[in-house]
Structure formats: C-alpha cells, structure tokens
Image (cartoon, rainbow, N blue to C red; front, side, top):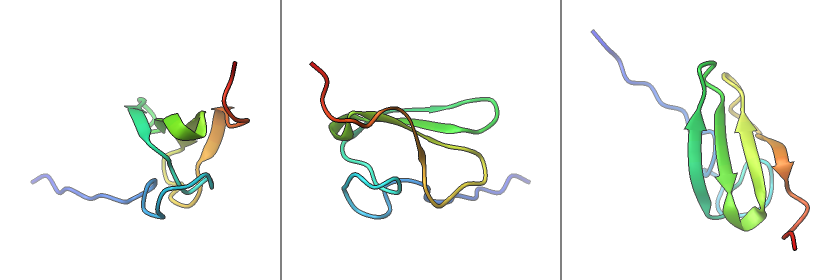
Length: 68
C-alpha cells in the first residue's frame, strides 16, 4: 500500500523575501536526491531545499535584486 505524506517547505509563511518565503514562484524542480529547487520570480533568485530540511531554504542563485 502506498501512503501519501506531505510537508510544506516553502510558501507556508506568506509572501516575502525571507529564506522561508517566496514571492511569485514560477518554476519547480525535484532532483533524484529529492532536493526541491524553485524559481522565486519576484525575489529574483533560485531557492533550494535539501531533502529533510523543512525550515529555511538556501539561495543558490540571484537574490541581490533585479538585474539589468
């Protein structure tokens, strides 16, 4: 029997720019290690949550404001 379990790792703390918040997430990818990667459009960054980390994400690209 298959059991479905879910944990909120992003977006459960309202809209914003903290590492536990997103602002207009636009894309989502889950790799083979179950690392979750999200394009956080309005914060101009790529966020990553490693498997088992349900507190704060890590900025892996951008996050310094809008580019030119």
